Length: 282
View 1 (cartoon, rainbow, N blue to C red):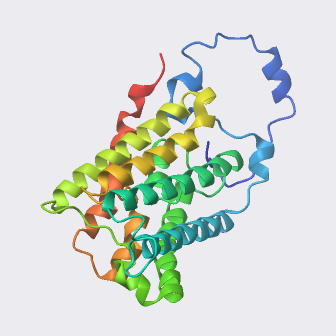
View 2: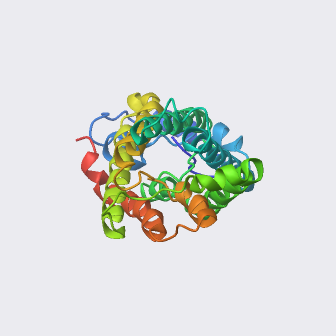
């Protein structure tokens, strides 16, 4: 599904294929990796791996994609909920605004995830996803830090770009910073946001151990992201992504719950990785 190495693999010995052909066939029951281990996200072939761009370039793609996503988010909030926008009359309630935001961000995730799976390149857009995939043993450890740095830097850069383009109009909507509902403390935000990410990453693990289902994963994850925004938006804020909140919170100065928004999705990914063995097919 995703990157498993950014290195050109060592070619097999000349007689490897012959030895494999001579080996007796075995049953495809419980010994099949795809049915017993979350690492069953298919490992790429040597020819595919050899074509991958260097890690630095892939991280740059991740930065650019995250920057674009945050710019689109702030821009959308500016027009959907900003004072004086012609769209505010069409979308007068928080529910309608969250519906638009959920469908938009879910669509972005779906559009980006599909090509990233096929080409095994950038497109996580979320530090918790990169860390979670590493915990599931389907993403290389050496790529985690570059990806996370690229995503968080892209969060700040995307909001900075929106500030440059929209100026006071972006500031008037708080740079699209999220906030929990009335009566919600950081502890409640942490618990609910972590639970949402746990569900999402368990879905990733479930689909990853069942290769025939992998082609359905992008729209399913996109729908999950949309649901988090639409249904959790009025409650915990509906972030599900540290990069979604970092840039907006820093620019708007609303950092009171920031630690919870940063930590919760990562905690959820860790819980999902711990539970993933339960999804193995027997």
